[in-house]
Length: 621
Image 1 (tube, one colour):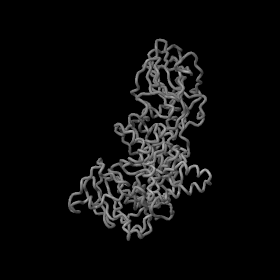
Image 2 (cartoon, rainbow, N blue to C red):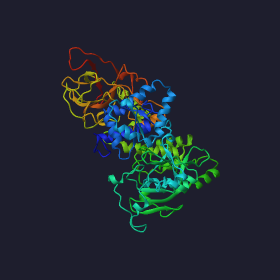
Image 3 (cartoon, one colour):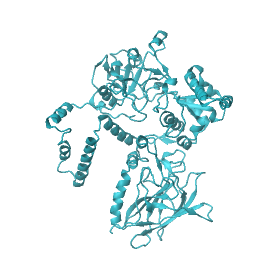
Image 4 (spheres, one colour):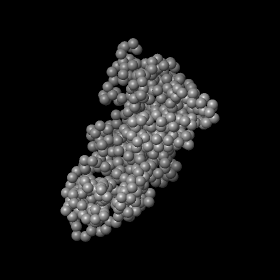
């Protein structure tokens, strides 16, 4: 099982469903997974992707994920062996035309139900796609979504209710930006319920119905069950104005909005199409009706963080604020002739009080001055600033005792390696010979104590190369061994995951805490490290994607050596044969940390060995 944010185990089927949703909606291209413009990928290819392969998922589990999805998140399409054989004789264009026809007619032919009923164990005979929610521009949703039209009104095909669910903190931003925007997705999502009669069962003047977001009865495709604010759309008015709306196979209503600005790029479902806005969590009732604010959202609710911010891209999180003093600032700029207020940064720095710690004053003064200069030099927009804020929030939401996403963000922009380099320069002046390297986000303070000679490989790894690693910890100046030194090591498995990332690994797998003997020696068995990508399901991975950078780290083993009388040493050692030594995604490789693994003979437990000595500097030197 994986872990939820609060540390509770997440069922395997939920972990798999989330992995499938992310791949099919957002990251197929990054995983080099071939995806058609209709959103289909071959299940055989899907099973070989890093995320799905790490779960050891099978075709029956994929089929079960499709059939059991409470919101019908996936479509499945079966291609018979006869069709495949015939397709070999057809051109690529003809084969793509077959898939396109299947996608457009899938709902009528009930292709998913047919695929679920087929008895065939070959995953290459199945195609799968997400029914909606895509952010990849390669997917053309118009090919498999039903466009709604006013002509449908006569046949009662138009839904009576179209509602978008959002959160307290998003409502002021929606008002400020003038509507709903798709943000990172291709379209804004809407549901066809709950109806207003369900929200106000006893009339508008009576208390709202109590909705339990944990109840399965409240599961509605197109809306999160814990949505705090419901925005009801006048669909007919929107269609009359030319705002497009679509319906997915699982009944979700979607719209990319319409262009309102001069650039033609930013699309919005305008606020003029809002019929009614209802706050249901605190029981406030109607906030907006017929183009006017009925009541303001209390500040303690409006300032709340969005619990789902940037996890899949809540489309209501628009990125514009309106400042009450903007006109005053603009007038001041006109009067002084400066493009920006020249005294602003100094006033912010001078606001620190006399009791501020001197070192903190130095750090904060430099930080404020540099970040203000950065904003001015690049003419940072409010939208861009808010994206940065949300990325920081996202990192905090993903971090826990076993994963530090904020640290990983610092890693991919080289900040931790730079700080380490500065520290290493100071350490070298103190005559410390063993180079340091970054700690990384997957260190655990509660690592299990093991005995010299133990193996840290607890969960069997069929494709791994076993290594006997040994070394001696010595005083750099005296060259004498240091008994009683704690040598802590940890590494990723061959699937690229540390144990706290991987539900198939037992706790504390591939990590251990050893103590040197009377000769300062340590020894244990481990795996020969392999390169792996840093996690791409959070803001660090998103940032790498935006910067068009690969996520891979060269093969390495982490070492943390401590002794009461010596300065602690955090480092990593790297396999000389690794192809990513010169372009580590976190910039941590140093020449002195590159090591050679050599063949080991006469040991049935390991075919390779590595000797690595650690040289520590005394605290008083």
